[in-house]
Length: 88
Image (cartoon, rainbow, N blue to C red):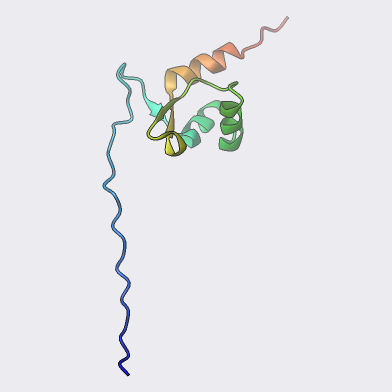
């Protein structure tokens, strides 16, 4: 009997496409975690608002199930400004 050893070969990752974090208008694009910090919410709350279509405008890039979500900074600012309540 021969005792052959099996060697596991690590799988190669697909190359990552590096996309600048700026959209065509020069607006900074933020991840969900970064956007949550800007608006003062948890990432989980921001995700839930996005799913309920009540959160700030966002962009998705990639296949739908694996899309990376990015928030333009101007959209976050507009969303927060739209939530402002006038005292009186």
